[in-house]
Length: 205
Image 1 (cartoon, rainbow, N blue to C red):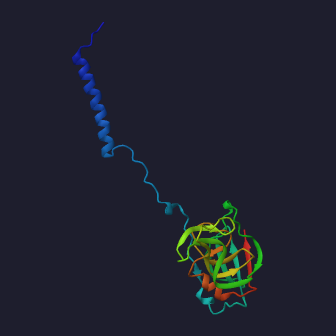
Image 2 (image 1 turned 30 degrees about the vertical axis):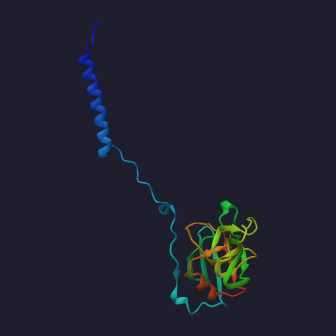
Image 3 (image 1 turned 180 degrees about the vertical axis):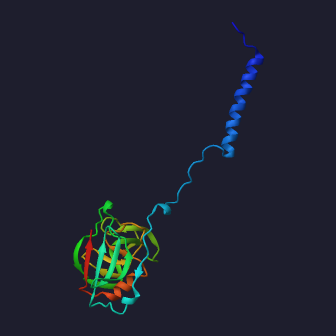
């Protein structure tokens, strides 16, 4: 039987320590595999193509010959005259996952209001106008003492149904609204000027 002396144990311990020290140095110098860099949340959002305006049709399109087509699947709105597209714009329609649908079908513009405010969604504000609680529903939330409901602004509003319209809003790159069709701030007034009460609006799946 071989007897292991203290010197052998010491050498073995030094050998193990050297291996561990080498592994630590390798990790610190980055010679090992590096983790993938974390992507920004904005990189994960699909960016929509910007609006396109056919300037050649600007003078030809008017409230008497225009019509609107909205594609839910493409998240685009088209202001047209006949079969020609004057404006091709990104939109953000209703978020189906939260139960907020944008209806599909054949509609007409029922009302126009350049400074419309929501009667359902908005903020609770105090007497000085300071927002106390944001993102509330006038139907589901109770106003804190000393506050009142202030509807969210919906500039250049064109009503399509009782609860749905086209207006300026945030476009995150996907369907995210409570049912309305959000438009870019630079496009909403152009569409507003080229439609009238009675203009047809076709919303496709």
